[in-house]
Image 1 (spheres, one colour):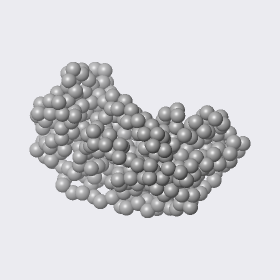
Image 2: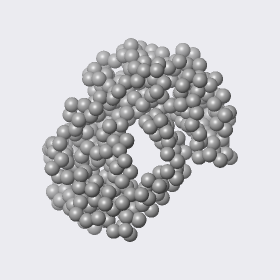
Image 3: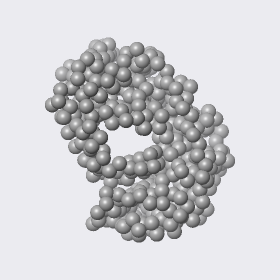
Image 4: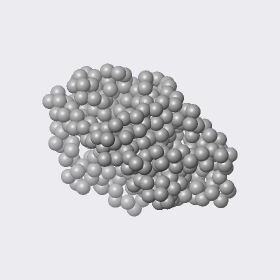
Amino acid sequence: MKEFEIFQLSNGLKVIHQEFPYSNVAHLGVIANAGSRDENTYEHGIAHFIEHVIFKGTKTKKAFHILNQIDAVGGELNAYTTKEDTCVFASFLQKHLDSSIDLLADIFFNSTFPAKELEKEKIVIVDEIKSYQDSPPDMIIDEFELLLFPKHALGRDILGTKKSLQKFTKSDIQSFIKKHYTRNNVVISSIGNISADALKKKLEKHFGKYVLADTHENKIPAVNAVNSHKISKPETNQSHYILGNAAYSLQDDRKTPLVLLTNLLGGPAMNSRLNLEIREKHGLTYNIEANYSPYSDTGIFSIYFGTDKKNLNKTIELVKKELKKFCDKKLTPIQLQSAKEQILGQITLANENRVGLMLAYGKSLVTYGQVDSVKQIYNKIEKITASQILEISNEIFDEKTMSSVTYINR
């Protein structure tokens, strides 16, 4: 059995499908390679707004029927927006595949964006914005990204502002969709107990009849600031800190070594270097993590933690000390192999999450036009060398180019 199959519908839409025998559950998503970085200044927040209002009615269904169709039979209908992608997806029992395909196609191509529903959803998103403003970890990440890309849409938050939201009309939404939801920018991803040939027939019936524009909008290249620092004194219970740098793009061969380095330094495992040193050894923080987000032409590496005000400077010092270790000395063969074993295990376990796998397939296909097999991914990780990790550390962890945001609680 093939790991996955890629095919095209008659209208040019690309599809990736993994057949999963003996399962009663299927997952289907439509991913558009268009997110908040594709917005002009006037459109700030519109990609995320579309994610909300795309469920508010079609030519044949009201919002209630859309939200009820899959959920009423125990399934889940959802969506998300990132800096570069917008996705509508569903999980459902295999026997509801036809009706779920019909619903996703109807949502994606026939949403009518009723004016009354648009105004209601603006209120909902303003509440969502306020909830983020009540979360210092979310706020400091947004401020850091704006600090790093101050003159580019990548630096703006995804949600928009109350002021920008109030301006959006149905015409604005349709203009953004027409410009960015094109044949080259949209893919369908699927996992379920059905052959690729049988799935193709069902998708042709519901998706194949729609004509998508063949245009392609180039993304405006990102230019990052260097060595920028900001200190704020908000009313929080903790001090918060984020340190980082611009990093490698999705197209860069150094992406995979940086993924491994980030995981070793501050990934989700309890034995990450930062967690062992800052939390376990010194007891200075509850949460400390390293993150790497690659985009089409750049990326963001960051380290975040929250701590008591009196421990802030000491924690920063210890974080920088750990970074310096990676810059000064190569990983030993045992350390490197251990890091590889860990991330390979995490990838294998993550592939058990079929929703995440389906979305990862779609993201890869819409970004690269292809998807690496598990074997290809494993091979890339096995080829990582200690010299690569040392070189990347000295570039990304260079204090002369890193930037930071500090929240010092009053």
